[in-house]
Length: 139
Image (cartoon, rainbow, N blue to C red; front, side, top):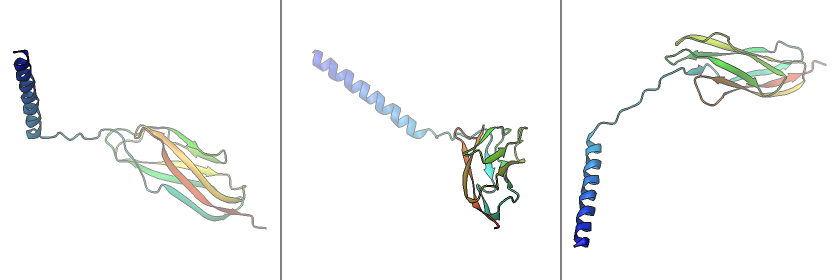
């Protein structure tokens, strides 16, 4: 008798679980729209090319906030003390453009290969930007 009752309960629970799965197949899946700020750069790499020692080392990364909330750049960090990035202080409204200025110390002769990390409310991880080129001595 106990076996018969146990078999009945297991069958009843099994049919109930199957019915719930069938119901889920008929319901439409909701798609989640992403909400917030989004950053899109015109270029992620600036190539200085070959420049002479002491030349102008200032370049700009231009970006657009393609999201629907204000973009706040909280920090811009360079991989080396020879590169000084400057972030915008004010929030960038949706659809607006902004720029991150980068100044490289062109008194150092040799190849340039540096990374600038951009921290903002658009992404959980830093967004990497790169500069490259070569500085030659005119002597």
